[in-house]
Length: 129
Image 1 (tube, rainbow, N blue to C red):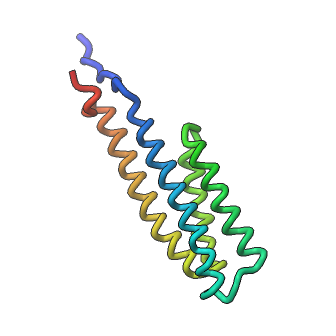
Image 2: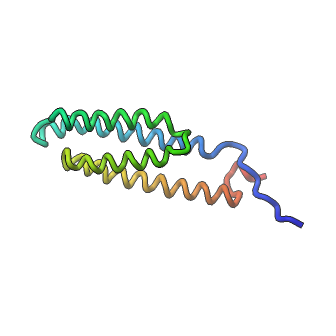
Image 3: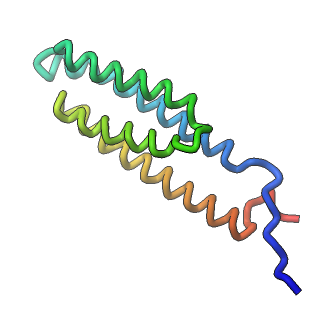
């Protein structure tokens, strides 16, 4: 006699999770763009390089928000965090933003692990009979 298999969720739990990741990337991109005036006034001014870096990073984040269905989306999201942390070389305030969002993405990874464990055990509300 075989063990009773765990029923699949009635609804896709990853759909809402992808929405959370996309929303986090959009908020992160907006925050990076809002840092431009800070870098301009406190950081000694903007150079063509710092403008290109920060605006390019924000554009990549906006585009990445639409790609969260891809299998490589989480790797892309982590790469965005690394690039944001490297923004410390543009200005310290960008690095601080990077540290804050690394904490946000660490929490997202914890939530992702929790959803996966619950789904594997059949404990999601949509898996209960």
